[in-house]
Image (cartoon, rainbow, N blue to C red):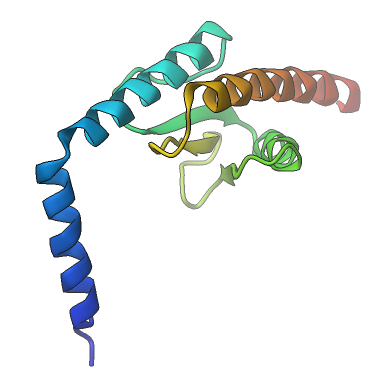
Length: 129
């Protein structure tokens, strides 16, 4: 009763076949991720260098992470604030995940919206301090 159901094994087998048979999907994901990461870094956001499709945007304060995530959600982007205990105290962040269903125009719109939300959150935190 604790083993995964046979359907999970079938799905894993199918996904491994796709990975092996369609390398262009992985290459596209790498390109899209690199594009977004570069756009975010160019916008001055705290994004570590790397090649993963999971891109953390470091914010530090829990409240700021929540505020920016909510601003992005209001614009239709599924962005979550990651806070302690999932990450060390003082390292709250957004976790952005790129997938190949996204195109460059959506990623560019996302980068612009995130940069604006980050600026707004800085203004807000200064005003409310």
